[in-house]
Each structure stands twice: as structure tokens, then as C-alpha cells.
Length: 328
Image (cartoon, rainbow, N blue to C red; front, side, top):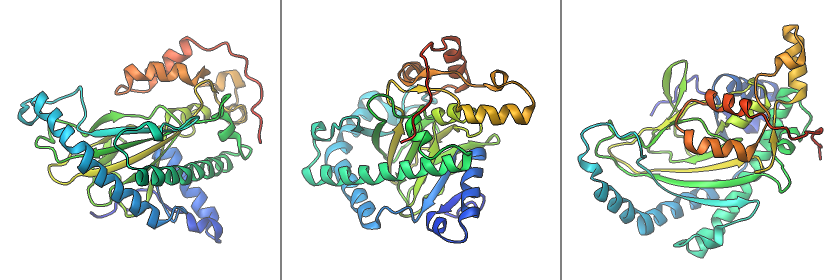
């Protein structure tokens, strides 16, 4: 599949060369105008990624494929004649890493797979925190601001959704995953490099996210849009089911802690107010809320536009007293 030349692909190795400034500008443009970018040379070993992919595909074949086929048969999905809008053509399980891990409790995972996924999660967590500091640098925020904005009382919420999108007999009628924005913070995706399907909405057009070997795809969630007061955007995306090929998707979500209070960064409000010649209170576009409250609302509205969610949170604006975010 040809790579669309305009899709932002970031070579992180260039951050330690004289091309750092250009690379940082590319990341900033991607955050402002795409909500997505793809990382190469991100520091996670290719050997680890290959092992994660091999074990994930083996686990699907051994433990999940038949269950998925049974579900399809029980719901009569192979014979549907009209568009299905209340389910997704995906087989998934979810691993929780922070604040506490559930890796030992997931059934059907052999010990080798558990150990490999624990190592993978550690690498992805480090990459997420590195990226948050790169975003801080681009935004003019103190190093550590975004990580601490996510922290809450017990640290961030961090987990991984492991998905397979099997061949679909009616891809025109059933989506692999219906269009949505992600509720959380920063999403880091290790995806199949042979079977495509992920698309994002840009300027009214659905654009393919190119599958590239050993890359990590980054997208921004709703919380980063709020904290940046809309300077950076979360973007609608979906997965198109394919008639042949099984697509692997391992999406890790680095999110705020459940009791973290989310609100636009004061430094960015000052900047917006100065640029537009208005008071800081007038520059505030987004609400202040507790992350857990947003997630409760999102659970029922995931596949709808994000703007009514923000409006609903603004209507019930939290009265939690917010002090300055400690930078550690």
C-alpha cells in the first residue's frame, strides 16, 4: 500500500540530530491539524515488537478465533442485508497496567505471553511519557506538566486493548470499529503492517493510516484537547473491516487517573487571551471536570460527536478546587 505523502511520519532518531527543530515542528503540526502521527525509530526494539505480534496472533488462533466465529453465527451476522450500527467486527481483550495490573488474572494467557506483554507495556509507558514532554516543549509548558495533569492521587490510568479484526463477509455493512474520538489522553498503537483498515477523518474525508512495519501510531484523546484549550485536537477515526486478512491492533491508552481534575492549562489560556485581546475567562473554551465523570458520560456516547460531551461537562462544571499542578 502506498504511503500518502502528507500523512505525518516522524523519525524520532532525528530528535538527537540537527533536524530536531524540523521534527518538533512536524509533531506540532500533526497535533494541531491531524490528531495523529506515526513514529519510526521510537526506541522499542524490533525483536520485542515481533514477539508481541507473533504471540498475539497465536493467542487469537488458539483461544479467541472459535469464540468469535460462534458469536458471528449466533447473531446471524454472515447473512446480514442491512447496515449494522450497534456492534463492531472485532475480537478483543483488555489489559490493565496502572494503577494496578490485571495481567495475572486474564484467562488463557500463557506465562510467556504475560511476561512479554508486561515488558511491552513498560516500553510503551516510557514512550508515552517521553511524548508528553515533547508536547509540553511544543506547547511552551513546563516539562512534566502533562504527566502531572494526568496524575490524580494514584498516578495515571494505563491499559492496552488487544484486538483482532477477522475477515468480514459483509465489510460494506459492518464496521470493524465504528467512528469515534478517544476519551482519554495519549493513545499508542502497534498495528498490523500487512492488513490495513484504520482511517481518520480529516477535512471531511476518510484517510487511511498507513500500516508500516515496527511503527507506533500516536493519536490524541479528548483530554489533551481540553488541556490544550483546543490547540491540539482529538480526531474521529474508525476501522474498516476487510474481506480477507486478519488485522492485529494493540492500542495502549495513557490516560488521566480516575480522580484527576482536567482543565485548560492556565499558561495556554494566557497565551490565547493575549493573542485575541480578551480576558482569560473569555478565552476558556473547555470545561473543568473530574476524569472519571467524563468517562461515565463517554460510556454511553462514545460513537457520537465529542462537542456535546464537552458541553454536558461544562453544564455540570466541577466545583473541585484546583491548585497549581506540581512539576516533579
